[in-house]
Length: 352
Image 1 (tube, rainbow, N blue to C red):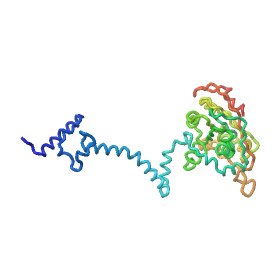
Image 2 (cartoon, one colour):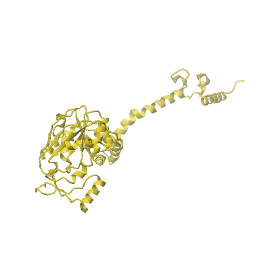
Image 3 (cartoon, one colour):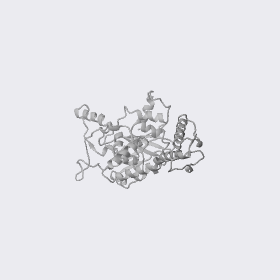
Image 4 (tube, rainbow, N blue to C red):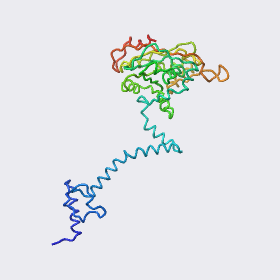
């Protein structure tokens, strides 16, 4: 007995559903030609025994998986560039900050054209600042350059290592300098981009370990060992260094296999006249407390004015020059929990 056409179609669909649930392959013979969609005949199948609806599903899946990588990236880039010229520029830059939040912790993103700006030569000639080379630095090693003294603003270290005003790359070929600064400076919008382009990185252990162990060789990290505490004691004609409890940079150098190189900037303390507060006074205690909270010391200093020589303002025009010492020999690398031997701790101080 011959069944009606609609009954045959329903029976064919039930067989397909049962075979699909049982994870059995469906053959083309199980399909009735009349069950195909009128807009997509079976002649569009790419292979024998493959239904048209399955081919279209595969094509749609392929297109959906390829579209993000081929079009989503350029579209997002165009949208972000467009937002920079609208009132929603902050949304574009905030998105960039979230995406780029870890770059300054991984050696940053330096640009040689920023380090070679002509303005740095005027900056150098104002004091003037000179860089005196006394020893070679080998490009197959990594170095920690201990800079002394800190001064108020580290003018000498920034001029010699964050710029090419004194030709650092020409004097030390194959060496890439990194000037370590407070981590908070690398979180300020726009300023972080400038700092990274000049080769400035945050002074935290994770960043320093990455530069010395995961960034190849020929790296020189510049650490102002005395830090903010040393800036409270800088005054013209006095060389007061904070070294007694500064041992972590020595241990870091030994653990990472880096050479320690001392360097001294003569004239850094003469740039400003600072009001030195007496130890034990309330004002001194307030300075120390703000230093622990803010990370830098609020100094009361006096400089060269625009119209008179002794008013608040610009730095004094004094000759500054920085000298490099020789790299210290390596010893057995201690573990993090092991104390440093006394002769190893005193080695950098003896070199200074």
